[in-house]
Length: 474
Ligand code: IMP
Image (cartoon, rainbow, N blue to C red; front, side, top):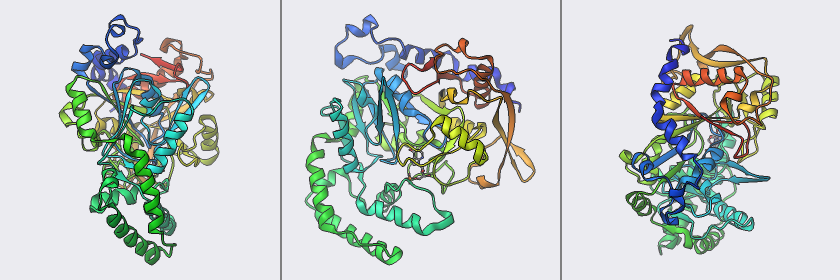
């Protein structure tokens, strides 16, 4: 099917509904109706609440798509911002004026005064990292107390998870995943094996014994399987007793908090971390993270019933990047990848590792739209593509001599596919100063049109720089 065939499809699919509603989200909060409502009742206008009480922002590639900026942009109208999966492997950067904020665990609503922020049960919590982040933000004048709520049911990440993560990666050689080393996989493995310890367990009298048993078991693994140094139980216990004390003001039952917020007609924003291609079920397994980083994880990761989860905004970079190991069909040859990496400053926010860079993969991104049920697309970093004579968009995968536009979902290893490209005209002009779609060079407009036609979702937000105002809304 030619991409152009779906031209009207994109508009029909996104329809005026979501486009309109996102435009309304962007209306200044000084709208008289909002001003006269008490602070507790602020948020979207009543008609928005009826239609989309829960709005999610999800990455549609391999992470690092710029979700932090998009969420920050629209968080102004949220009552509650929620993280539902992943852990300190995530790294969102938000630029406000001259200041740059990097988030690993705190939801990005924390930058907006008055918003409540929830770290829900689906997250694996590195308590030390969270407290460090809280200290860092508080030092910069951002109040956290009374605005952050951490689920007692979220699983804790312990030093043995990080040690196992690094040790197992160290022995894998060519099959390593390239994890962030933050203990994510081992922490989720313990959750599923039912040996994990949750935030609420910090306050339970059995905590000591359960931790001791876990440390003993993990030490057997570290020493026996990997020849690594054992960890000292008393040291870990001491550390976590200290964390328990400091975390206490934030810990609560977030299921009921969210449920009550929903019942009160409040407006919830769900913040995805990583991207759908790293989803443990629908991503490029085994080169994925250990949670459902797609929208599919929202219900389990928060307790919000599936029928109350509203629309999903998908975030995609105007090209593709990937950090860590694993197949990447549209990856550019080293010299070209290098140039794009430098232009886009493509280094993982959590580990600082250089990202692999490539052309926009329409096949993978369309698949992500389908899995997430994306209603609107936020296309980020379009400005980075200025200066190319021509651009390529992957519109098909060649597998054993046959071309398909379907992303293989477990049946064909992704490293067997060869990308089929459509060549589009590039543009030379810088875009960072532009604020209206019509002011974009024709080639840039065509590029956006082509992508939205191909992925069948309308790009209602186009980002042309890291700052809040470097944004084009359509
Ligand atoms: P883990 O989540 O640390 O276990 O890493 C598994 C894979 O997901 C690796 O390829 C990581 O590079 C990748 N990954 C994890 N978190 C992020 C992220 O926030 N952005 C991009 N890649 C990530």
